Length: 111
Image 1 (tube, rainbow, N blue to C red):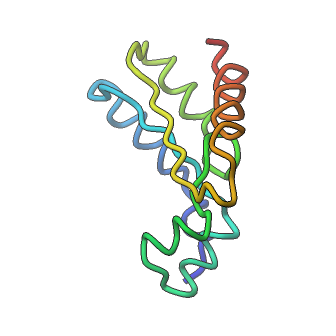
Image 2 (cartoon, helix red, strand yellow):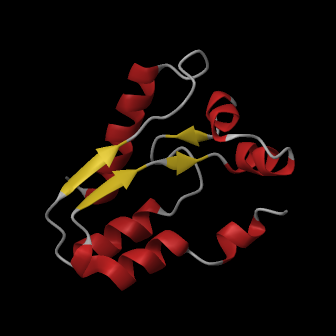
């Protein structure tokens, strides 16, 4: 299966637009495209995908967070933004990636 189907339609932004009035908090996680493609082609389990370092912090993958943040702003979202750094700490230093996420969110949202 090719992952291009995941990037043709901006599902997260579309979901935000569709369900904006119902969003109570936002859980942020990004995805590394190349690792995701490999995980799909090899039919890896979720745990194997995490250990392969597929997931990352916002701004380090291909998710359109600028579009998501814009949608939230347009809908006067006032709730929490929760960052999940579900990655292999042996590969990605947790503190470095926490700082990277905070910097990206601050620069992208102006908060």
